[in-house]
Amino acid sequence: MSRRVVMVSGPNLNLLGERAPEIYGTATLAMHEATVRDILEPAGIDVVHVQSNEESVLIETIHAARGTAEALIVNLGALTHSSWALRDALDIFGGFVVEVHLSNPAAREPFRHLSTIASVVDGSIAGFGGFGYELAAYSVLRHVS
Image (tube, rainbow, N blue to C red; front, side, top):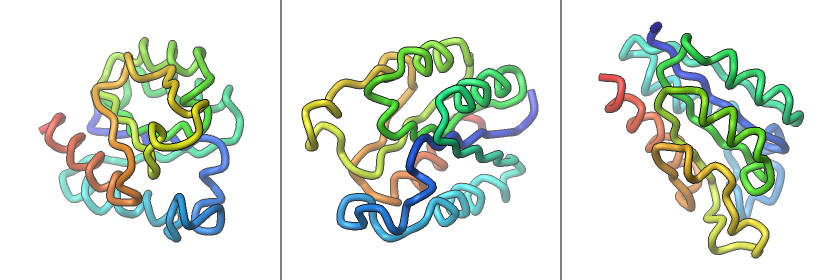
C-alpha cells in the first residue's frame, strides 16, 4: 500500500471562509488542506484531496481509496447526519479513518446530533475549528508511522 492519505470534504465545505465564519471560522478549505499537507508530506505521505457537493462523488472517492490509501481524513459536512451510503463506503474502506468537524455537532441543532458514520471511523475530532485538521493529520501520522 502506498503512503497516501485521502482527504474527503463534503457539501458546502468549498464555501469555508465565507460561510458562517462565526461557526466555521475564516480559514478556507484550501488553507485546511495546506495544514494537512504541511504535516504529512514531509513524512513522505502524499495527500490527495477531493471536495464535492455530490454524495456519489464522495462515495466513489472512498471506493477508489481502497487498497491505495492508508488513511482517510473525512469531513462529510451535513451528510454525516444523513448518509447511510457514505457510512457503508467508509465501513468497507479497510484503513484508518479520522473524522473532522470544525464545529461541535452535539452542541448544535438536534438533527446534527445523529452521526451515521460514528461507528465506522477510528476517531472523531469536533469543535476545535481549523485546529481539528492539524489534530487529524497528526493522528494519521502517528497511525501510519
